[in-house]
Image (cartoon, rainbow, N blue to C red; front, side, top):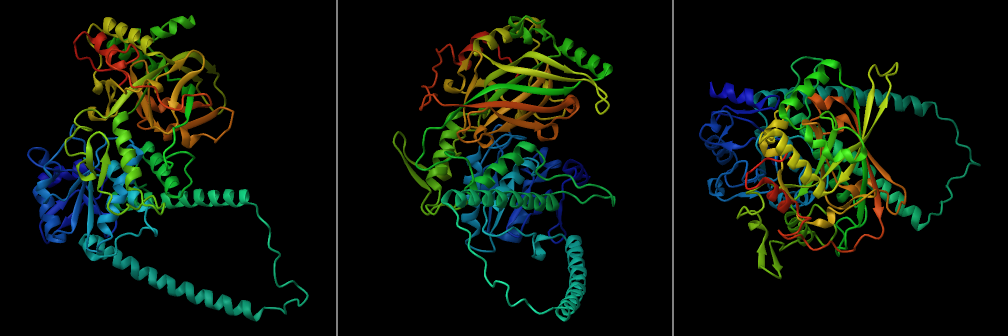
Amino acid sequence: MANYVRRIVSGYKARFRDETHGVDLDLIYLTDQVIIMGFPAEGIEGYYRNRREHVKKFLDSRHKDNYWVFNLCPLTENSYPASYFEGRVSRHPFPDHHAPPLAILALAAREMREWLQVSEDRVAVIHCKAGKGRSGTIACSYLLAQDSPPTAPMLERSHTTKDWARTRANELLEAIELEEEELEASQAAQAAENALTRVDEDAPLTVEPKPTTNADSATDTQETQVKHAGPALEEVLALHTSRRMQRPSSPGGKQKRGVSIPSQRRFLSYWALVLAHAAPTPFWSLPPTPHPKVRLREMRVRLREPSGAKMAAMKLVNTLLETAGVQQGRKKAGRDVQTDELWVSLARYNDDFVDTLEGWERHTRDPSGRMGVRRPDAERMQDGTEGEQRLSELFEDGRWDKSKQVKIFSHLSTTDVEIAPSTAESKTRQLTYVLHPISNNMWVHIRKKIKESAKGNIPTERSEQDISIPASASATPEASRNPSMENIVEGEGLLLDACREVRAKLYLGQIFLGWFWFIPIFHMTPGAPQTAHFVLERQEIDFSVGAGAWIVDVDVALDWVGDAPAEPAPKATDASVENLDALEEAQDDGVKVQDAAA
């Protein structure tokens, strides 16, 4: 009965049944040295997830002391003592359903490489909660950093009995087909040789070399690196999908994606560019230089107008939530406040957390420039304020993941709506919401109005989850503390660090539409004076189902800022009126209220 429940919870993911040791686990071998699995649980959770004792039995019996566990779950989500697996556990935590800070990909990939290169007998065991999105993202980051393309597992131990039999049968069929192809090729070559005519003796035997400039060479090299990064990423993602997800039961069925969240795939594409030395300058430059700034001018969100029934249902939900006041900031534009208008919250990871990760990324980077390789003796780093730091202790005290890791720092509000009439191709009208950043002070007024209108019935983090995203995936109202990224100039937009990750979370009234993560510099043309447009279609936005299915696309307009301060402004104190922490804390009057923009 327990195994039946576990299979239901696994959903479309493949499982591993080890008949010799009597265990059935939500686990697969991605390669002969990389294992991906669901969280090793105990107690009630162990009834429907991998039982921790079964996982240990599996690993000890098959790999003895040659396995190392990579745990991606924050402490706010789940935990277990590293001693359970003899201390062979590393933590690289980031929240469920989110893209990670990019430096985590580098640190995890380098650590995995250092462990696995010692012996072919060693394996890396990666898990998050479900063992799919986050685990797949980290596993793919490692495979992308390898010297040769990854291959599916070849050893019998890496397959279930059923899969091994299927693999052997397929190999036999492929061998037969290869022999037939070689025979046909041989016959064709013989025919071509017989048909050869005499070579023209007057024809030139060499080709004049074409001179190239340094600029041409550099451009060609960069284009080659970018092209190399793309196919490599698709190959790695395809391998993960083929191994982690079940095969379709019907002949015409389509296999579910392994790493299915668009933002996680987008961050893997950034990592592929970093590995190919094709990332935009000065991203992760050595020595580090001040990050350039960009302005988020506006965001345009195009929606298909919902049908009358769907619109009525949406308005009913918004009315029940009693949050009409959320649009107060639009009154200054001379428009009525509506519950069916669109707004966006912007968030990023904790500034100190990212600074620490990027410091370790620079410290562990191999001098050769190979971004996926960890330099020797990188475990220790001298810190001017705290003395010697050890990489293995980075997450030991839980300072970075015992509370929410993603912090809100600003909001955008609708200032205009453009209506496109229906056409022969589009049966419904399309609404384009034009959004601009609003100040933190304005957002405080909006939140006060929400509190007054809702009479304390502010929706919790779970209220937004039409698609069953757990509350652990949402951010708290706590803001990031760097005001240099919250500097809004009227009519000019919001100042952002071009090299830092940003999450944009979309709402229609109080209905959650979806979110997406991006790093601005990867979508900007260096030195270009014109506005860059980062456009995402609906399928490139995370969790755009339910009401999110109305999205056509999102267009983010970004400009370089040439006169931005070279160094970020000092971090805000609790007394600063620009500090969202203090503003929201004052607004709540000591009552813990979940942020509607979480």
